[in-house]
Amino acid sequence: MGVFTSLKEKLNQESTSGETAGMEKDPDVRRLFYATDVHGSSACWRKFVNSADFYDADVLVLGGDTTGKAIFPIVDEGDKYTYTRQGDEHTIDGDDELDEFIESLKNTGYYPYVMDEAEYEHLQSADDAEERQNEIFLSKMKERIHEWIDFADERLDDTPVYACPGNDDPFEIDEVWQESDQVDLVEGEIVDIGKGYEMASTGWTHPTPWDTDREEPEEQLRDRLERVVSGIDDYDRAIFNFHEPPYDSQLDEAPELDEELRPKFGAQSTEPVGSEAVRNVIEEYQPPLSLHGHIHESRGHTKIGDTDAINPGSVYSEGSLQGAIVDLQPRVDVVGLVRG
Image 1 (cartoon, rainbow, N blue to C red):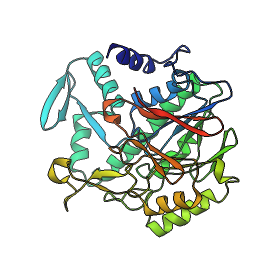
Image 2: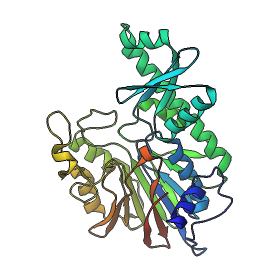
Image 3: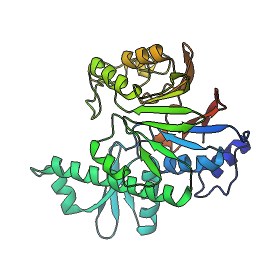
């Protein structure tokens, strides 16, 4: 337990000082580190960037759903700050305590927003309250991504980073990612990974109960996937980076929901919720490797025909990063799923 804790602490440092997790590789191996569904967690982003040194990775790939799910309001009452969590009101005394609390919120994916009492009341009851809330939410998402880009630009030299938005990510964030020299936004694109491998990416999914930004019916999703992979030169050296996992693959097991979208039977009953279109495309082209996310609970590694399919899962709300290490040598070798 002590060794594992030490490794996690090193991974979370702002600079890993060239230390690795003991996963050295041969010089002719191209190592890929993949993580997904960080949902606004700054701790997860730092660990993702630090993974280049920590796991001796040559390429970093960030799957979909980069943005967080909620604004966290904090009210400035002049002599103190207050916030409500799970129905209980809490008090913060002093700016140092406030800064510490804000950092903890950012690490678990929230967007803290400090406002005075007048603005708080306005956001509760004004005619334009919903519009203003959405403006704040989007602004905070963009601000967080700018911070992440700055961190990556400072910490990484020539390690390529490929990011693909997911269904939960609003379209407006794309332009922010595209400002980065270090991070390449690869939605709908094919990129050269090295060792003769090309990666085709898309973060779109089939419809979800939450009506998110990047989702479409299975038939349209199949057309999109076909367009994305059509530019690959050699499917024997292909990587499919699709946010949604294939249907009934063990990578897509999610809690069964009732009509109110609440988990049935205490979330103990699960069902496959992945995409048939994704599965069909994998089965047809049989790339050596496919990378997935979307279903946080379905962490795993499985085979679909000759394809190694991976979903590292996500526990972003704990500030913990789950990922997968894959070596290209030139065959695909899934080194393992990691957490730190």
